[in-house]
Length: 454
Image (cartoon, rainbow, N blue to C red):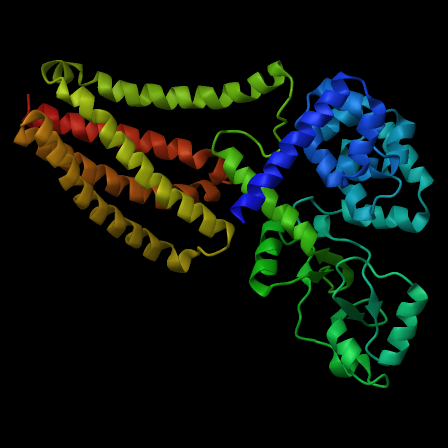
């Protein structure tokens, strides 16, 4: 499995090199050949690895029938840049074959005149379907849903269902069941294909449908939808409004995108970046974005340094303190990050509530205390070995214990406090944690040293 993964990565790198060489050689026929063998999502992947000028140069070689899906799979920033370069006619042609829910994802990024023209070219029914999707926020079930759901009524036989499906001719991808509704469109349950195929043709839908399935409220958050799919091993699920009327369905491919975006958000957010960060965004634009995060970190660094500054005289008298200080801060930072990561993940999965938050806090305090005691002995022994100063060894041991306890408390509580303040923990919790562990670690270590060693 590992070899296969490496080979696949090598193939990606080699293909990227081939695309770049073809661009440099202005070899359009070679570009067309290379791109025609790729899935639109793969083309988008390679476009994100090219500079803005290279993207513009390669775009005419992308098969026309792929353009809409390629735009759909690009990150927001790269897509917006390409859309800005395309004329209205090209944009309308590119988005012509997209499903309604996919079109709703990229429509807000298009120029207003293109949106108006695109809406005029659509049939009334499609236009209304598009408006129904746009009525919901992008990060909700309504924003994720696909309107192309196959519905049947409970009072018809399976034979009628078969005739209906044959007349329909085509079933939406990833359809594993039919949705049962009444005459007013109110959701009543699902009819799995397995039951449809294994029961007698004269059986009524209402006799075998699964009425225990609840529809997903259209306003449920996308992350909660993803958690539900994971817990219940769903492939598709119905989306309903507040009156339980069926609006559409969510499919597993939409949920995979949500999970990927969430993972990217957590990973990139730790560095103050968004998941839509363009690898080859203009220098000034990227610099402006990173300035804020660097400024925040500078403030926290100055705060930690100001604590050290208060003990200049102590450090001057005992140089060993300057050598050992980073150990205290680093141990606290790592311990706190472990707790922080665990809590943020549990929050994302909906596993933390008022009923168990306190138990989790006490558990992390216990871990912090045991780790503090164990590593305090280890670090104190190292300090004694290096400097032969028992008092110094005890001071750094106590500082390690205190800082790991503080790190556990901070790691468990910071994400919960930030969520109460409507601040994304994935974006800012690590900065707050680092500041606390640095300041407390330096203060305790140098304060004890000032009291007992100097």
